Image (spheres, rainbow, N blue to C red):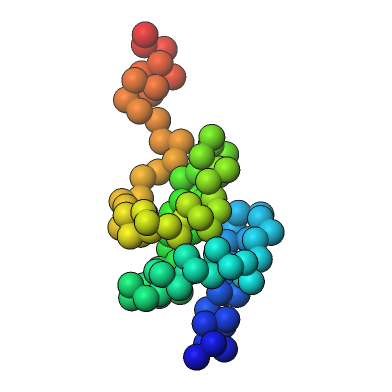
Length: 104
């Protein structure tokens, strides 16, 4: 069973590192415990990738980019992140569109 879990950590952390240009280690005790906790709740590797995708799309280039780390992504808000509705980043609000058209 130990081998199966180590096979779980690596793809999740490699995916995070590739997506967010980070260098987290799949061998970190804290990271492993966070992944274990979510796996024990019934979440899958694909769920981790979905959370990484959603939060990186939302946070890269923003103040929150610094939170693209295992302790934030895989912590107690994991299920909320997984189920959040995807909103388009940089989508103009109605007021921004009006300003772009020259209305003020």
